[in-house]
Length: 200
Image (tube, rainbow, N blue to C red; front, side):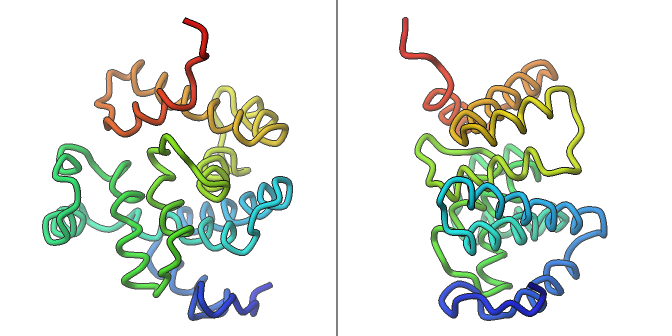
């Protein structure tokens, strides 16, 4: 797998070259997380009949921008006319929504399916493709994660990917509310689209 050559229109590198570029931008622990998300995304893609290659690439690079300085994100938000409300939040939101910009710029990945999955992996979206859902869930349940409810999250996602998405959204919102954290409005849009039952 280390010398695997991706489809030419997805990544202009072998996997080994892409791994090297991602590793150079991250701490060892963060990079190892990315490798675990890559493998989890591959498993979920196979289980759900999704594009395994796109899922793998998205998993490998999703946190590429995670450890960039705040000043770098702020400058990119301002220079590229991203939603100015992003400036009221921080890295937990930025490394996905804005991180896709750095991934496209630095890694030469221009595939919209991959980039959108990266944009959405921190906040979800009311409508999510299979690759969006796979990355969203893989990041949450990869083997290095350990928090109350993680085993239920894994079992839920492996039985039904959409149910895994709902479980994660509900868990994340509950965590933010319990901690009295500010919630990015698009995260609430995701919750409203995915979690409430239809019964009033």
